[in-house]
Length: 198
Image (cartoon, rainbow, N blue to C red; front, side):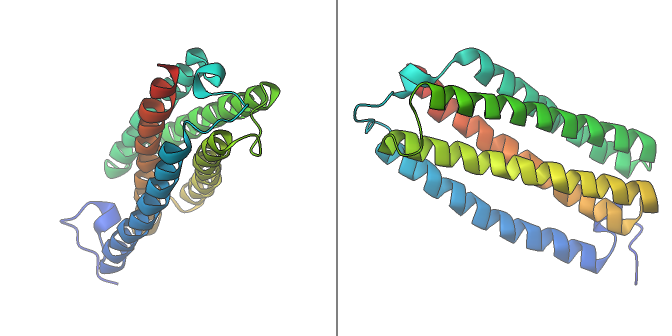
């Protein structure tokens, strides 16, 4: 296998470049998925029947905490990739662990929010609004959960095999996925929570 030393480690082989390109294609499908969920939400946002509305449900404190945590994790995954490119395995792993801990904290707050919503009478069957809201948030939460499992698997591989063109490629693709989740959350924060609180 020919390795191109002029490229960053994660792009070092043709196979690696193809995997990154393939992942961008996959991200196109993910964008379509979330675009559909946002569209459904925007169509149904005012259809809360006798159930609670966004203004009744949303509390700004947990939402701000989630946003701060997830944006911080985007910064730490960037530091992990930077450390990886410098060949600093230990630092890369530390930043990956911090990213995953922040992701777990985000998920914990989101689960707490779900319990709060159900306590306030907002189950998935309550209204079209709650159904679309919980589906959108649940899909994002499921993606974060998958990311936590995926990131943990990559950490174990880096620990076992070190930083080579394979583990670097996997780590870089994971970072793209994590940044994507952060971008989706910015849209949720802006167009679901902030709009719903107004």
